[in-house]
Amino acid sequence: MEEEGRYRVEGVEGGHGGYEWSQNVEEVNVVVRCSTGLNAKRNVKCVIRPNRVKLEATSCSRVDKEEFETLFDHELVGQVKPDESFWTLDSKSGLISLTLQKFKEGESWSGVFQGHEAISVQDRESEQKRLLLERFQLEHPGFDFSGAEVNGVVPDASTFMGGINKS
Image 1 (spheres, one colour):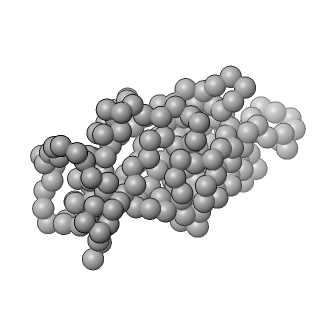
Image 2 (cartoon, rainbow, N blue to C red; image 1 turned 120 degrees about the vertical axis):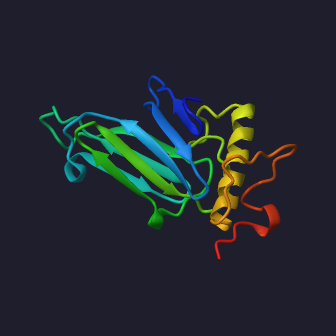
């Protein structure tokens, strides 16, 4: 784990490129590095489905702008809400950021894509604790959970005590 809650997945030759990801109670965030100087409308294609994401981009140095390279086209570990998910491009830094709205809020993902590197058992437990405390903070905004600790078996934040209550 790079920093708490942020993970790096290295690229695989003949497969996907590398990316970084993180999650919170409501969403999974994925950041992919590509060429700088890209135009979001002309050089990037992204299709987000409930169980799959396909991301393609061209190189800004190519003469044929229609030739797209697939950065990834994979099944997701969990389900997302496509209509509430989106992507952005920072053309100066060459970073494409995807924000995937979780279908099941509070669910702890072990990775982003099926078959890709999953987080370790220790990191998975840390993520579950972090998401549970984040959920409590969302439900009780007047309380400070910054110093709170969760001990023992960590319950699933998406289902514990009937699930997330935002009212």
